[in-house]
Length: 261
Image 1 (tube, one colour):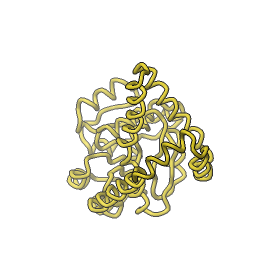
Image 2 (image 1 turned 135 degrees about the horizontal axis):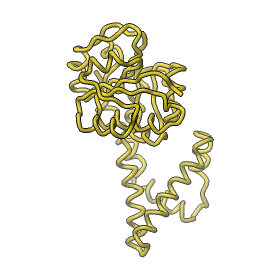
Image 3 (image 1 turned 45 degrees about the horizontal axis):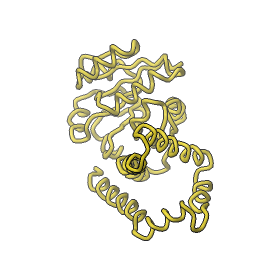
Image 4 (image 1 turned 180 degrees about the vertical axis):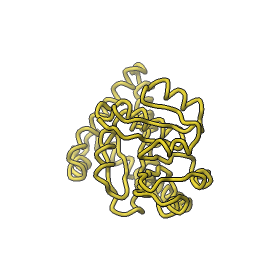
């Protein structure tokens, strides 16, 4: 059980997802959580759902009550919000601002003991998915390891690359939806088309989840020449379908770096 108090400046979707994850993790059940009143409706809802969540009267009150502070506001207003706050020297601050470098965030605040950058995904509410962390820290990695797979970056620019990878979310969902829609169009009941397609994709990802790169390369190449998989692979490759995914990622990192301040 964790006895620390974690404060959230901002109570948007991502902050709420982290809070849901923490409150649902048995090993973190002792974590006290203080949320800011910026989104009063969502803050009140979280406090009504979990006994260990309280709503502060101001952002400064969040800081005053917390050991760790997560900054989770819209990047466009982050500077104005953070500059108004007085941090303690012993604070651990975790920035989840998608496009702000740590040196920039650091310039907005009074000196703190430790400052980190983290990129969680909404899946964290279910205790799954990747959590980017920079720089490395055993305590933070152990804590958030209860909420997903913490992947520590060696250099901060690597964080931007993981941000870009998350940009394929909607495209990936669309692939799954396209496959399920095809099944329905060709005679499967909608519920069975969805059930089978989602289960199929889950199984594929589970099969490579332990071996990582070595297994992935093997599975990419493992197909019968002239078979069904080979037929689909050849068609999509011949029309540049996979190249478009890489081009999309190139566009995402270009935009990310343009916004990267």
